[in-house]
Amino acid sequence: MVLTIKKNVEVCVLMKINAENEKKLLLEMLEKLGVNEENAEIVAEATLNADLKGFTSHGLGRFHNYITGIESGNIDPNGEIIIEKETEAIALINGNNNFGQVVAYKSMNMAIEKAKKIGIAAVGTNNSNHFGVTGFYSDLAIKKGIIGFVIANTEPAIAPLGGKEPIIGTNPIAIGIPGDKYIAVDMATSATARGKLLESSRKGEKIPEGLALDGDGNPTTDPDKALKGSILPFGQHKGYSLAFIIEILTGPLVGAAYGKHVTGTATCTKNCNKGDLFVAIDPNKFVGIDEFKKETEKFISELRTSEPKTIVPGDIERMKIDDFRKKGLNIDKSLYKRLSKICDGLDIDINDFIEK
Image (cartoon, rainbow, N blue to C red; front, side, top):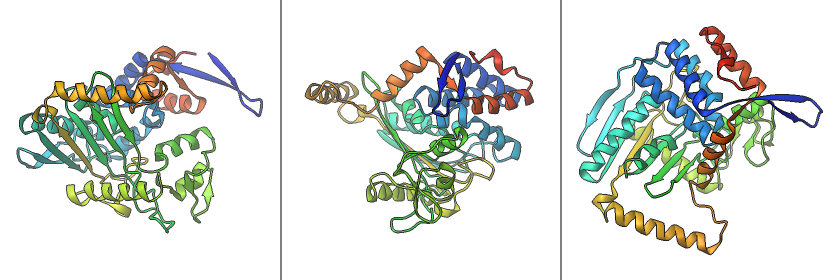
């Protein structure tokens, strides 16, 4: 039990859950929801991966949205994943509203296998669902010695430069590089992810300045006003331009919705029609994996020797994972209540998994 004292002198009791118990809890909930073993394993791994890396807005804190999606019929755990088009280098996948994690997992693995044969491959998806943390799928490529590149669009959140109406999604991008150590980038093209706003709203916390605007186009630190307004792109025109391009590559290119027409990624209360694109590149078809890793490590060594505290993309995630495995994940009061409600409905005792 950990006690933290807030400024208003209110004592908040935080509970914890370790990685093993989180995985068990997720699997049990999914089993009670009728999800088959293979799909449940994928969804549980993706959800746990988010919490391990510190993206708690996409982990257990997001899980209730998937249940809402199942109950409303917007997520079909038995939806048949269909290959609509395929060549040696590409494939277009219709997820038929299955779990976004399941569709993305299978699509990324398809891209990896194609890349192993011809060097580079791309798989696009439509009619899928929110898939959690983008980097989980580029990680799949890393584990097989492949460079992974993943992008997706989301419900409108970013207003075009000079405007105040959200039209473009937070549109994440993740790139994973195979190496001796974890090298990866996973980020939204907005100044913050929408999930962070949802998490701050749930916790009753303010958001930092400079991240969002309210509905009138004024700066705000209130997550609820930000959710009704718009999120700023990172780096102004740079983030905006990148989000714009991703909107096209994961909308018109793959037969998915785009801009104001995208629904179902924030809360799963509406049918999800967003798109994803998974690209895999095999270094063996270029300089060879060993040469690639050797030169990459040389570059990283140069960075580290220039300044001992130099951070390489992937370092923070590795530190977060180590910290989670040592200390567990904090479960605040609001998340505990939300999980308890879910578990009660599924005849599961949440306290069998939580450390108090």
